[in-house]
Image (tube, rainbow, N blue to C red; front, side, top):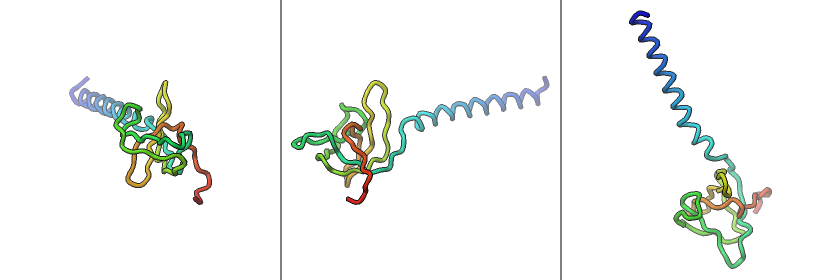
Length: 112
């Protein structure tokens, strides 16, 4: 193998490594959630209680707001959490954060 062939081989291997690394870097972002882009209603929360909105998708995360039962929110996306409940990124007015998906019911009729 001459020097020119060695350079081509090294360049091809470097390209393969970079392509593989980029694939792994992008994969978690794509697997992290599924787009929803729909309206949902806060449900399953007692009338006297509220649904906490969290900074991150975890019950121990910082609270950034709260929604009352029956309130309509925009669901941007949701994530599947292994051995736990799914979480959805929701928004209503100035409040945007994560809520447990079991407290959301999709709204099929947007004429509210």
